[in-house]
Amino acid sequence: MFVTAPRVSLFLAVGCLLGLFGAPSESRVVRHGDASQTQTSAPADAATSAAQLNRSMSTPPLKVGARGPGVTRAQIFFDRAWFSPGEIDGSFSTNMRHAVAAFQTANGMAASGSIDAATWKALASDNAAPFTTYTITEQDAAGPFAKIPADIMERAKLKSLDYETIQEALAERFHMSQKLLLQLNHGRSFKAGEQIVVADTLTAKAPAPGRAKSIQIDKSERMLFLIDGQEHVLAAFPVSIGGPSDPLPLGKMKITNEVENPIFTYDPALIKSAKATDSKVDIQPGPNNPVGNMWLGLTKPHWGIHGTPEPSRLGREETNGCVHLTNWDAHRLATVAKPGFVVDVRE
Image 1 (cartoon, rainbow, N blue to C red):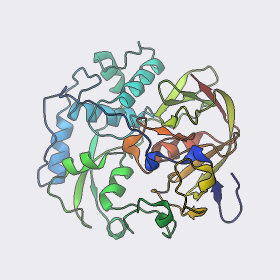
Image 2 (cartoon, rainbow, N blue to C red):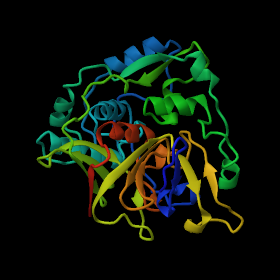
Image 3 (cartoon, one colour):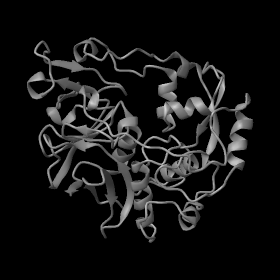
């Protein structure tokens, strides 16, 4: 990777291309484990809808396969505590199980990965409502929005890799899946001035873990942990990592630099899936850039920790080497993990 000022270019090897080029994804089985309510519609008035959701504060036992409002509430609480489930989508996935287990470990509980009464009690320290309303602004509605072409050569023609729709932009802002955002706001137009129901992920409930000293990446669980000087887990984020052809190496590296809104330089000579007609091109910055909108470079050349334009596939795909987080988790990580931080990769 080379960095030049004032323009930033990232010459990244195969390690940094996502499943955008055909990486396999893991299927997920979802069952109705929290049948107390459904999320298929919302009242016309967003404030009423949010209030109804916030009054329904049941705390059922939850485990992998569960889905529904109880899972959504738990995901919001875990997200605000810096134990990220990835996208907030109302489904108890493997990513969420790992986040729950990490939270339990950090709070001195048995790491079952399932939510029981003791885990709900620990989450109760965050007593703020999980849902809130947001009024869409003129700036939100103005975009810009543009369809992102599948072909990398066509993407190189774009001046920026923006969100495709206002729903995508708002879902990412509030750490939600687009499907859940639409379910909570059934029938709404997403026009300027309209009030919508969202997960309240912007309310700071847990301070940034300022005591963090290093990063650990667990390859088997596909999780990234912020660690303090006593090896205690302070925060956790699900990640995608390299597969057998481009495995993330075990051992210690360091963060070398931090680049917000990076330019991605696509070099077909370094990409196994490149077409014979592809040429070396720059892909401009934006949330739908192949490396997202935050890059933390590592001492291993061309490798880094960075965001992704496809948060729904996080932890369920094999990358070509780099470590991918959601764009929002990559930004949160960058507020704490600075150049010089040790990154310890473990099996």
